[in-house]
Length: 174
Image 1 (cartoon, rainbow, N blue to C red):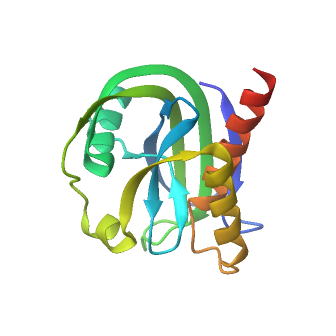
Image 2 (cartoon, rainbow, N blue to C red):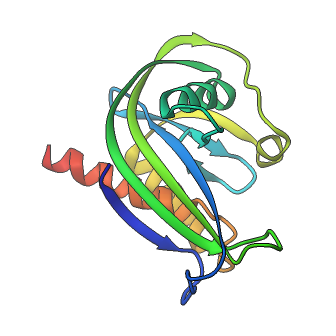
């Protein structure tokens, strides 16, 4: 899969230390001109549905359970890979120096049926709500949130703005 970007959440981060690794999948789900996204009502950001890949899971299986949990929708098909983004941050775990996460983005489709969300505590605290939103509106919301976050606590925001801008550029050239 093509590497789209590498993001360092902290400038000058030395990535030569002990690394804890996480692999995640993210769904790029269009319905007409709108994208299925997760609105984090606590901070106003918009993120792609998805999350961590569990041991033994395929990317398709992981994305299917994440879309169902976060959006209450059933994955219909896993399509073409858009690419991957690698992020580096200081590790919170005492035995590690670096947190490295690779997010794999896939175009996919969902079935129209809707189920109750099954959010974990963190997602409940963040106020995760599925929403259909235009690329421009998602970009504008995330850029506005980034401007009000000088500490960088909105850790997924830079990654999601990058992918949203990429999709916007692809639409303009496609």
